[in-house]
Length: 114
Image (cartoon, rainbow, N blue to C red):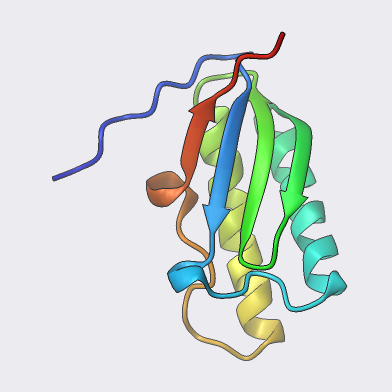
């Protein structure tokens, strides 16, 4: 059964969590982390998503973001994720996905900021 669509309101901050498949490592070293951040920044700029805060853990990422258009967050996360998986697999000679697809398995939690 397909999941329910997420409620994404423009300008409302969301807590996004992206995990590695089977909780596998997303980042091996600082080069991986820096490349992910470059891809994230580029994708968010392109799709109108403001990044307020981020935490890069070994096997997952926490983001506090505000999309300026409803479809912007999904597009940004998809672009960043697809590009990062290609980079990661090529650099570390792998063939499987390293992170879960943002469009289907990342958690988005609305945040109240006072």
